[in-house]
Length: 276
Ligand SMILES: Nc1nc2c(ncn2[C@@H]2O[C@H](COP(=O)(O)OP(=O)(O)O)[C@@H](O)[C@H]2O)c(=O)[nH]1
Ligand SMILES: [Mg+2]
Image 1 (cartoon, rainbow, N blue to C red):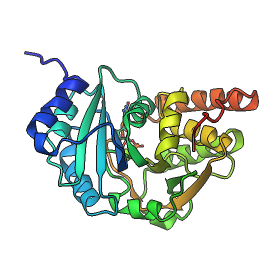
Image 2 (image 1 turned 90 degrees about the vertical axis):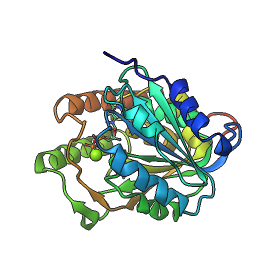
Image 3 (image 1 turned 60 degrees about the vertical axis):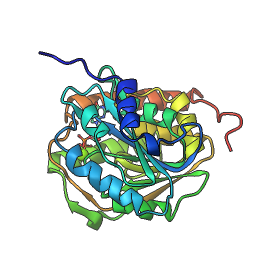
């Protein structure tokens, strides 16, 4: 018997019923939103989500929301996230896409729903350990995106990815630097800290649904006068990547070309009015 995938509302209300005494007010802001894009993560989330929640409850932020965005998974990812038991001070919401739309689309959904003064994006596999949040926070500012980087100091890469993926990453970055974000040596590490208002503004302008969405965020935010700071963070290669070396690389290059065209022809969105 097949079971229909849960909708965002189903899962959130499940959580709220279970923890009604700790229900938060979605209309208020919190210190930190953590967006976790998740596609078929039922295997990894049971290990990584408790680590993430525990660390967040011991951090500087007093009120934290974690938004797991299930991007049309078919393995029960949403139900696993919904069953998480967050410590005091942390709430979990699960947002669900009815079909797989891409990592960028999932991040956009999380950003649009976020309430945090700051917004962290973290990959579900914690390839960068959540402890590194304090590294990014030490450099955070209201008009700066602080990005975890494997390129600033490669001794931070605890366990490297296979050589061909590393090479493809370097070639992609050469193109990124030439065409879109000069001076930034690693746009693809899945660990970035945004000022909340910038993240929510980017959610309204973002066009790229796939893996090149980070580049779009950085190009557009920089065109708004936002600073981009690359900070070395620990990173280890985790097996079972969902990134297909050929198909997704081709998609990313195509997205990058479109972005470069928009940048060169004045097609980037202006800084939204009222963005402080
Ligand atoms: N929403 C969404 N997330 C994805 C998709 N593919 C991968 N992800 C998420 O993006 C993050 C990085 O994916 P991963 O497979 O670890 O890629 P890699 O480490 O960059 O090779 C994880 O949190 C994945 O669940 C997708 O199609 N949609
Ligand atoms: Mg990974």
